[in-house]
Image (cartoon, rainbow, N blue to C red; front, side):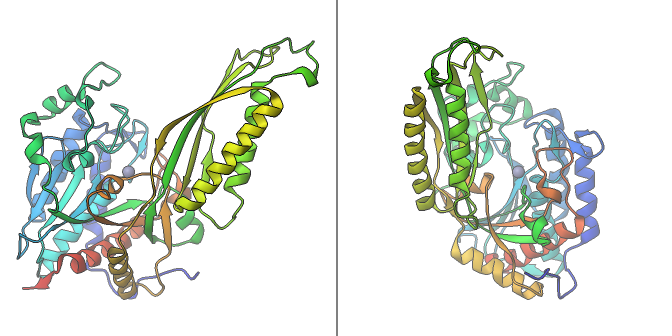
Length: 424
Ligand SMILES: [Zn+2]
């Protein structure tokens, strides 16, 4: 695949975009290049107020809703049409990077400002959103703002506490939110027509392909399991190998089998991980009796994922039987893949075709994004921007401003198509 390059001058303002991203990265800065901007924190509030200022400079009418989302609106020629929502998040992990989420918000504001400067007026109302608490690290549950506006918060969510015992309710109140308004801040059914999100890839594919931007085709469906194996402890020096019921050896075989299943088709984007493992009694000279470990299996093709699941469960049965260990398997999360809307992908492809020498590379997203929540109520599309070595959720996360500009130009051109914008 040839490296795609722009065939025209960009209309978006590269310098303004870069300056805003650099300024935003100073709020909650850690180390040279990282940020810590936990949701609803003092730093988050400062960032929200700064971004609100930029929304105003772009001519948007702003508000902060009862979930802590920052929203800027540009009324279209026909406000009765379903709106185009564009954005991402500006909260971060405690040890996070400066591009995760932020480029999707600052990029959307830049696109709006460019539309105005170029004399466009949208037919559909456009709203730019910086979602509250995408990351989920402070209250251990994310996508809060996006689930909030679509009426999908769960029972008891406001009572969740952070490490200091502060509830989400209190944090929202301290942030200045009026909790009485939550019901009216849920968008009526059908009000949001489509959602667009630009995000750094958070994976290495674009970097390996040496491509600045890509089109996302869907967000893969994760299956999260917790597996517990129970064998029998014994003296490491005396129990002969053939007598053993070693839960850790069985686990090791399952891990290797999982990898084998996930790589059966080397061209498939299937990924599988055992990321956490606890052995008991965890002693040098005792045969491990209990092992608990997690499995994270993701794929964009649900049929393929289910085939792998079936083979995995069969393999676990066989391995446990052979090692004479018993098992319990708990399903923690099971989500289907969410595909991007064909119509929106076609618009992004068309915008890409007008802008670049080559067609856009296409890929799925392994990580979740706010778009995952939005996908349950409207069509959505996503643009990925290359990040260096695929590193994210780390202060070392890095993206080139030139790539972000290309992504933003692509977003801008897609927004023109999606909003029915015309020159005045
Ligand atoms: Zn993100």
